[in-house]
Length: 268
Image (cartoon, rainbow, N blue to C red; front, top):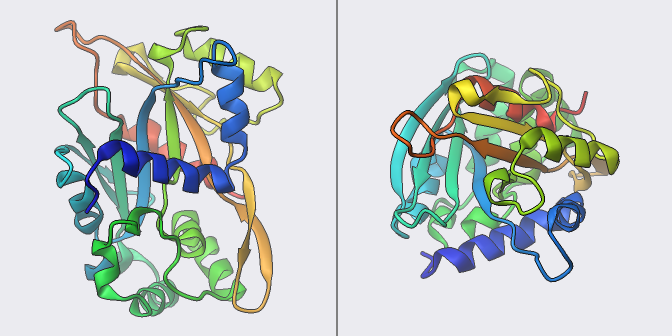
């Protein structure tokens, strides 16, 4: 397990920007000046399958060992996902959002493909320090990918990219240029970035104490068994948190908004 939260996030970030080059450009856009590269990360998200080798709890163990605590549970009925979020006692550390696909609710052909992939994986791999940014532990054909994609964009993404941060999230509250999500969205669009408009450009808002937006994912080549294909990779999210009646900033997540954020990796 990791000895240090910061090292883990640095490794996750390097692995993420490798297939999400737009994240660098967005950093430059939002940073106050050339020497202010300090952008606070609100949370990082991961995807997994709810099978014994790859369950949400197995991924969460890496964070619990670093002092994170389980905070919220979420159910995404339409996408057949369960999720939990975790927070560190040190509020400057990013929150962690982990979701898992309810494999048993998928069609027979899809279940068969997912089991075939996970069966190829060494069960001990999940305990290794670098597991959270280790990519795919299996070989996948383009046909299998396309079968998954028909039914679950989430499953197809995970099968293709494996274990890594699905997105990082800029905390708008800590930016120097603006603390308003609408302004950030305008800056992004003016710079040529495409935003996820599912459920509106801004998902949520002050009434639920959290407003979120996201870019549409970059694209990267994935090597399938016999060919490579350009598919959606990762995206960048932006979160503005509001104070609750008790004067504290809301730290949780809003399922209705998160449901739409998942669609940032849609290929359509």
